[in-house]
Length: 117
Image 1 (cartoon, rainbow, N blue to C red):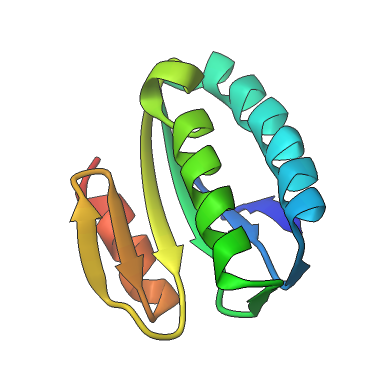
Image 2: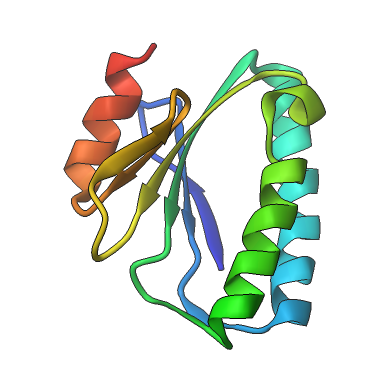
């Protein structure tokens, strides 16, 4: 997992490439929660691109379990700031909720995050 900031943008990219087991997913969430809470102290809004284009889940059940846990942790109330997440993937190009959209192209994700500012 790699965490970086787009230069000259208030957009953070989380490259979630790799093979994800339940334990690895929980460990990654602990790291991300700490990192995002640190950033939220300096920002009243976080724009995230969560890139799962090269992610392989151990199983669909583990993916679903980790997704449920992540949505409880990574939200505006827990992070005490507005949070907008663009999920970069290989198949879905759609919105789910107001502050979360799915994209196939990185540029589309960046443009959406810019447009909701």
